[in-house]
Amino acid sequence: MPASVAPIYRGRKSRFEIDSCAPQSAAVRGGKIQMHALSKGYYPGVLMRSDQLPGITSMGFWNGSGAQDWGLEAHRNEGVEICFLETGAMAFSVEAKKFKLKSGQFTITRPWQLHKLGAPNIGPGKLHWLILDVGVRRPNQDWRWPRWVTLTPDDKTELTRKLRHNENAVWNSSPAIANVFRGLAGDIVNWNEPHVESRMITLLNQLLLGILIALSEQQTEQNSDLTSRRRTVELFLRDLSENSSSCSQPWTLQKMADRCGMGITAFCKYCRELVNIGPMEYLIQCRLDTAARQLKENVILPVTEIAFQNGFNSSQYFATCFRKRFRTTPRAYRVVNAG
Image (cartoon, rainbow, N blue to C red; front, side, top):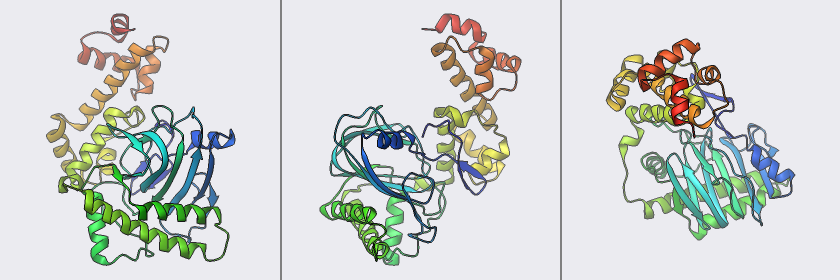
């Protein structure tokens, strides 16, 4: 789902954008891929009741045998997303990191991580996914696993720690993980048959155990800083810098602090530690940088429209801020820099 699409779910006082899978759905309608999926309503697929597989918001697989002319835009999910590429190869990126996803690998992305498949198009292949909501929207929140997770308390604690304290997004799967995803695919296709939900719960627990084992074997370093309050602010500021739709929202200092789950004083402290200026100054800086890029890349779009698109309430205020940062007017900047 493009980053400009309106957020459609909430966590505490914050709103988050999720993936509508519009390109994926269009590819299904066009016969480019075959897809089977279960959904709680946000994603395409057969609708599950809210009491079925609690925590699972989307689960499915697609199979594309030929060259594809579509890809998923950068997006976030309201839960932890686990994808497994059974066959083929695909470009995958999470935040600023890019990967060439190979068959037999799986990915793990958390709700606050911006990620996408395709560069810009996906490749042929069979991809499985599931999205599991563990009640977190920020790195410093406590994870709450669904009641059907039957791992021992120690194993759940270890799995949570490994998922929270490492930013590696791509892992090598095992035969056990691959077999679980194949089993889940069969149950997704046969969702309306008796005992399917029970079988899937068994398989999902096998999957979580398989992932714990894989991470234990492959994980070389854990970093507790990744779950700190400072890290939450760092990710928020990065999103302002890299995501124009976030940057253009009508932020206030209180809304920024609320998004990060802390008070204004703590939020401002971390912000200055990270970028050496206050939050509102940084917001204006990000908006001006985005506007400058648009002035260079879109010579037809009026300056006033660029100002409004980037959260400025008047073209005069935009021009004043722009001159202060770039030492010239928006129109003069466009003349000099437009390609």
